[in-house]
Length: 124
Image 1 (tube, rainbow, N blue to C red):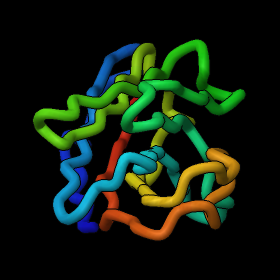
Image 2: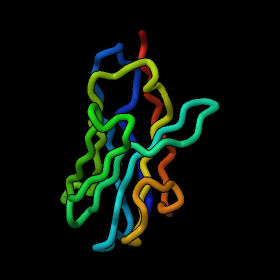
Image 3: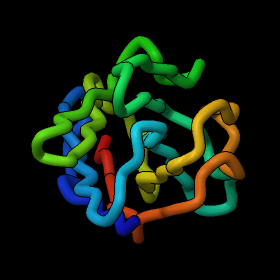
């Protein structure tokens, strides 16, 4: 499985962005996709996850009121919708995935595949 993120960039405080993660390769019925971010000097932080078949979502505590996750199975693409962005949201955003079901969605070690990341910078 290969993952390619897109949609990052520079945005002003209060703005919105939608990140995309295009998946290629073999996606099993147990496929799950997630988004994480990592700012310089900080731990990688869980943002959201979605079950590819079920559509069931999990959201990280710190951003659940502003971020949402979705997927388009026909396009093999997952999305992270981010609203009311703040300077503290500045980070490198990663897409992650696994073909193994039943793992803890917020644990970075649950995922076998990672994209290269897309930078999001929020100016004050």
